[in-house]
Image 1: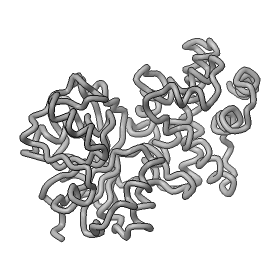
Image 2: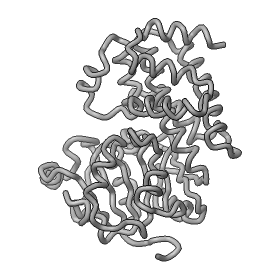
Image 3: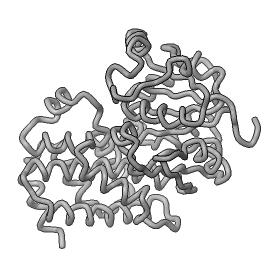
Image 4: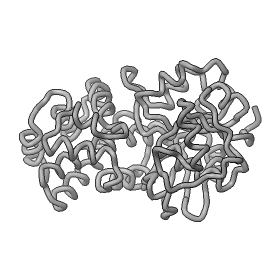
Length: 333
């Protein structure tokens, strides 16, 4: 493989973030491959000229997209694979692969963790599919798909162990409304993405309990300190957690009404059960799965994580949100 693959890009996933990424990529690329697992969704997409389920205001030139419900066909002639599926479904999609991808450049746009394995996505690709770490990039930052659809200025960070590959891929994303930066902190970026979803659930729970903006600010300022402690123990390298890929992503996920994790938490705070909240939501709240995984990882690390613990107690132990958050408020300063 050349130092960096300059061939076709394939997108794996059909949700709002996958749709937003397709919009971004097609700013520069002549065409893309796009894997959508249901044939009927592809047919409706082609008929309407837009994703029938997500970001319906974003219209595409159908002549520039090669759709397929066969993941092997999608990845076969692509050099760069961008995965944007919910983390709980990643293993099922990868099990369908009969085409080797160890020589391709993998980009994970999944802000989650592989349940049961308790692995961040880059580690899973490296260990389970033999992708060299220098050929894996992560895409993160405070960038809601809904605002990309509206072409509102957004910032993304491309993390890769190979800085030159990160820089070259970032150039494929830069446009009038997307600004990019690069980083080598692949592990830190991914774990931060998992944690910020947990903290957004906490923010939503407090919103559902009618805590105001004053407390939300205290909650999130404590959350970034908790994130910093966790990352320093788990992956101790120099990093500035005030950067947009850490703090910025936490803030937008914790405050924005576009945040599915905040919405999920708000429903829990208002009295919904976990199951009823999941059934009512049309999208996956990654933080639900991330909470359990990060709690299990922290059993060996023993980092002080009161916010993570509180969310875990509410979601998995059935403790009253009002009781648990009251205990949490007493620990803040």
